[in-house]
Image (tube, rainbow, N blue to C red; front, side, top):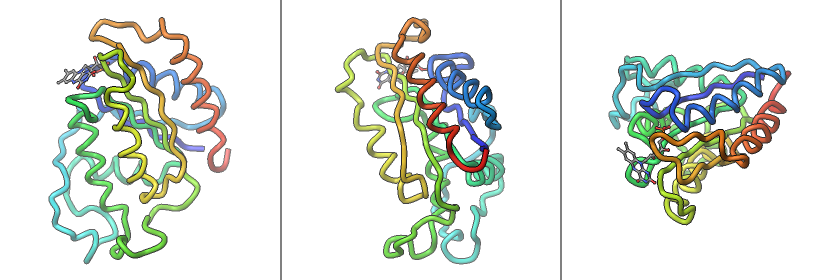
Length: 194
Ligand SMILES: Cc1cc2nc3c(=O)[nH]c(=O)nc-3n(C[C@H](O)[C@H](O)[C@H](O)COP(=O)(O)O)c2cc1C
């Protein structure tokens, strides 16, 4: 199976990247092929709302670094999206990618039963970290996006969430994150052809 992991934090080796790294390392151990992409190193814009992907093109027509990322992510069996919580949402880097996945929806997506241009059977994992220790805060982020990703062809999504992770926290001290990363990797690695 092939997995693509998108790192939404600008902080290299930060909390979300560390946890996502455990997931991808385990997928590789299980025989999967993984590509990790550091979004903050790319030049791209958000969706331009041109609707070209609904009228004349099956892919996003915006020419920037995200075109290749969208193609790779669309072709993967599993997608891992990692982000810190910024002002109660995903980072702008990840949000920019998510908005551009509008190009993955078929032209008549509001009414079509099959709304996605992607092949079926894909899985999605979110890794979200936040400084606030209260898990009731920002618990809406994952359900909001996983609903949209269901439309996009990822009927199954799982969340690995680290709360109370400050700038200098060490996620490795949280056993539930270490075991959670292993479990999610095992689940993702079962996707597609081995
Ligand atoms: C611009 C900015 C906004 C943030 N907003 C929130 C927030 O709304 N809620 C929260 O709990 N933490 C917030 N944080 C803290 C980060 O989400 C948290 O430290 C996270 O674990 C960092 O992950 P990273 O190391 O992968 O970047 C914010 C941090 C920054 C820099």
